[in-house]
View 1: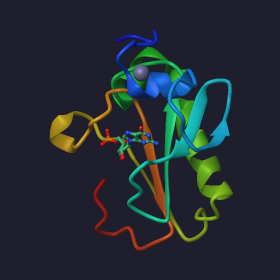
View 2: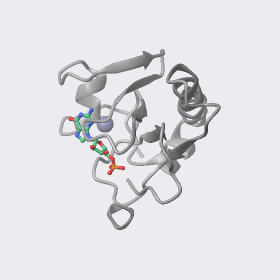
View 3: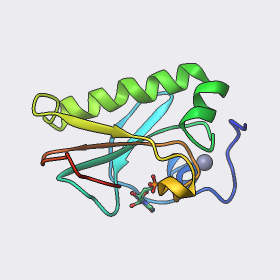
View 4: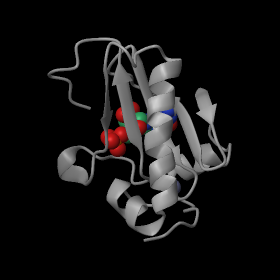
Length: 119
Ligand code: 5GP
Ligand code: ZN
């Protein structure tokens, strides 16, 4: 559990504007920006401004922010024009699942056949 900014967290630094990112949407509680290593034509990360290690910790510690992240994932899909063709929202939780940044984030992927996509 946390909620407080972590000094060694890459995504807290993006929230603070200390590391550049290509931001596509922002709200009071979330930031959405393009993944630096995109796995699909649309690959946007939606993060809460508050720091929690993964999606479940976010939902437990700040349910409102978790709902905001999910709603923003849908808004990103609409803005990127992939909502109709279909898109995927992925939370990796833990190193075994491929999580590399331990600040909760939703991958929003679209614009190609996603059936076998892994991120
Ligand atoms: P994870 O593997 O933890 O679910 O996803 C972390 C994602 O963050 C990866 O897809 C990776 O490409 C992306 N990423 C890592 N460092 C940066 C960065 O500095 N800027 C941006 N925009 N994305 C990053
Ligand atoms: Zn963080």
